[in-house]
Image (tube, rainbow, N blue to C red; front, side, top):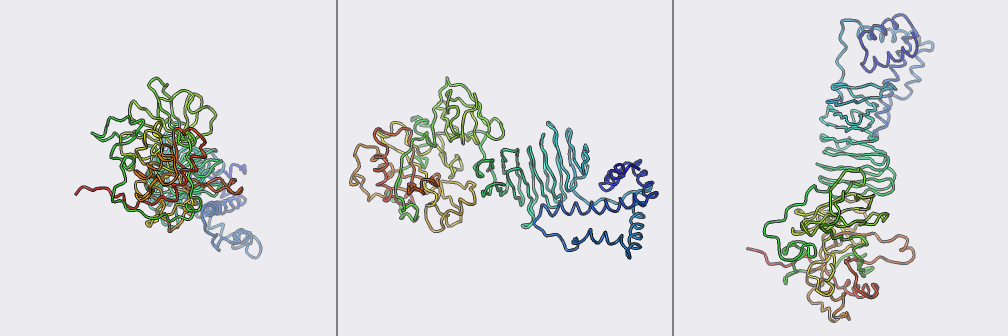
Length: 580
């Protein structure tokens, strides 16, 4: 028999794929040829070792001692004085094989393992250099490379109860079927993972990331340039394959690992903006004065408020503030009814996230991706975009979150795309407020080193909500400070801004009055410029944002506003009147 034909028949037997005619052909060859029997023995031994090697490659286990010197022991069996033992062993193996191959005999039941629970369209498995079209009910083995054709789909069911769904165009390798080790090379994988032991999580690798799963519902989309994780239930830890960057993602959250950036995570964008509560509409224009009158953003600090000193060494190390144009990192774009309807596409998947009215050429073509908010005054809604940029006539963004400008402006009714989960548009000093008065709370970015975890271990306090964050960012926080995402800072009532040398009619005084009446929420953080730090520059404690900067030198405004920073206190209790 042709050696290639013999090898193929033995492979098909070991994988339980022999047709009746092929079984008879292999049986005849083994009975007639000692060389064929030797080839069968060698190939069967290698088959077992290959499966074990695949399992070990996907786990942290060391090879069992019993495997050490396996090939040497096999070789010794065929050298004197062990030749008789080898013959006896081969005879026993052949006898067992003949019992399996004899017509009328059913093979022993295979051990329970993963199988294709459903196959729709063409799905192929590459197994030992052979490409096989699979069908519902076929077994899945460790080492299988599974390819799903475009427009097709497949569902794998594992004995532990875990179900993995593959979309059209998906390509995976099952590293270890029993231990749930999978490599997603391309396409979309969705999984419902049954609870796993702490020391045996499900591991899914992609070209750019590694996801560790202990029991949850999630989806992964991967290609050569990015990996996106969306978690629907439970928690998943995802680590970048090329960078020191990882984050744990919870229900309703997502994370993206791109080739040239750390893992970035956030709240999964909603599909529709929530309707504002009945009776919340008011006479003022929500596009210029967002959120309901009883929103925390628009509620004054009460006369019974309780203040605490700021406990954060990094905050006191550079007690300064700057006022930046909103276009720097939180641009607000007012749409008009005559503006063209524009598709907003997911930066990583190309999926359409929304269709919005956006002024032509905004943001400009070629500008670096940056957050922005599209305000639709006609509907009282805004749409917050992360990493927004132009791609021809479309906008591309990594997230698109709707905001009800007549709602509360805080979770759980409304979430935004800052680290705190609060809307980007909240707390910006709007056009005209420099002279008309700032009658709402401000929002600020705080130097990250000044933040600490709350007593609960989380880095968030109300009205902020938990959002996923890189492990190294959490590790960079302190443990005994009182600045967190969502913390409200304010000038206590015993501070008289008129004694601070500020222009009574100037913009710094308008900020001082706002800080005393409404305060400033810490909604986001920044690390500072590494290169500038080497040159002796220290980042300021706070960054405020305004749609328009007043005339004059912005450095003069920063110098005046910085006088307020050492006087700020943490508002531990707003002292609001409460209904009985």
